[in-house]
Length: 285
Length: 284
Image (tube, rainbow over all chains, first blue to last red; front, top):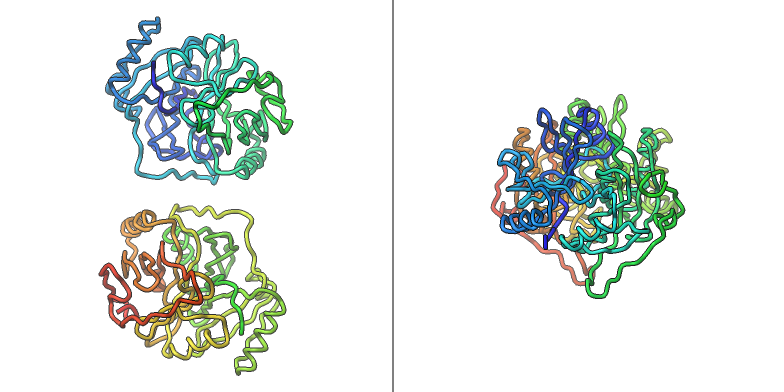
């Protein structure tokens, strides 16, 4: 079994690096940690970076998960190849650019770009956004899935993810005590469905709601509260149509033995118990 | 007895407002709230302001304390008057400039300006300064005095000030649980000696030390630890030669009934337990 320890970073291609950077810094509230010619890395917590925009095709996306060491990485590569996934080992140059010791890249069964890394870099510097969004860190991703039942099997059988709750057939998956680090949503296409950053308080969610509304950033869902994770949330649209989420107060699951996943309806009440209605295709619109 | 609710702000006279603003934002790491033609004020915590620079003389610099409630405020003015101190009542304009409902000012026995204010403004938003110095708020002010015992007596007899410790004649006065909010140092002159801003922890204090060094700010004392309050401190000078300190940790006076002020000798080791030395005459 592939033991995922943490969700490390997201890499997103963009045709407009300057515009994406402006969004990440001025609106999202991240801090530039590295400004390359064709790639820009952003920090959201104590890690070296958690988001990277690079000049390229916006469909070229990857989310990275941390594994313990080289041994676990090699074992994961063999296991993935055994069950029929094409695995590519990252070169030293690519690993250095990603600030990791080593990594492999493959596609999940839906075709989403996944990277497994070991020893991703932390930084000695604490995160400091250019605006006071109250971000405490990059926390989870939503992934598009062309077959959620098949993909749930992949993440829970091949990898160590556990189902925390389901909204309709969409599973919210945890790899540690945080309610979910991966969420799978039924979709016709593939790709990262949303990128979540945690913020300090519910007040920060609301402050960003007013700030982003004033800046005419399209709010696609919320402010609301998820019945599943009990987090207060706000979804909004960023560059290349990518959906970003702020949330605060996500439930943590301390007791692995006693916890049982719950089934929520795949309608707006299953996504929000305040009554907000999503304008997000994969949430049933 | 006049009850001080809390230390609110320090007003500093300067002849170079632009330089002072640059220092407060870039070096100190405070958030500029408003800049006018003759004044600029800054916040460091949930209070609307804790530091104000105005174009003017240093002799007009002042320390602001809050009195809670109109009745207590009026009683304070009457009590000062009974003891021969005629407080000047602030005009509407002066109140508006300070964002307070009422203002009364007087001078301590050595001529340092003290302002008493009613209902000073707080802010609904947490501060977000341009530089991440990790400041958590204004913590204390130190004044110079040629007659510390008289100044000390003013605060401990007319006001609710209590002496927490002495180092030589230097007196550390508290008004709440903090070891001191106001300190008097024997000096050849008078005026504001130094202003303490708290930072989150020792990491931030040391980060600030290296930042100040790289910004070529004159560090005059520390990093060190004050044997009296147990605060870790780093003291540096502004372009106007006013001293500022970043402080962290430090002891509260938990039990008012059992705390007895201690007398420390007037030596450098009473001002720093780590052995940092200073050329500032008041500290050695």
